[in-house]
Image (cartoon, rainbow, N blue to C red; front, top):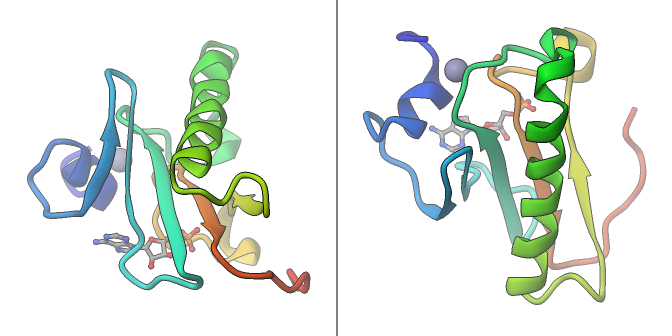
Length: 114
Ligand code: AMP
Ligand code: ZN
């Protein structure tokens, strides 16, 4: 989608610190990190929210999680732990309407999602 920020990052029309890329996903630093490590894993295709996921996207979403796991290992936070978050729509605080998984770690994380 032309006016989608994360589509623009995926197409390299918008700068981002990309740390991993393959045919289907891209991983880059969150611009406002909430922890020492805060990466965003996005699909290259535009899917606005988790509500827009279809049967055909099952493998892609699994690939996003598998990529997050590999990045966490590479960054040395796999053993201590990390959090993967996907916000869906307004009540969850989604502000960029192109699905993304937040990979957050590098310190002990509180649990107060509300
Ligand atoms: P969400 O609230 O789940 O939609 O999260 C959107 C995330 O995108 C936030 O953590 C933002 O800091 C991040 N973000 C917004 N613009 C950019 C950008 N240009 N580059 C990297 N991260 C961004
Ligand atoms: Zn998009």
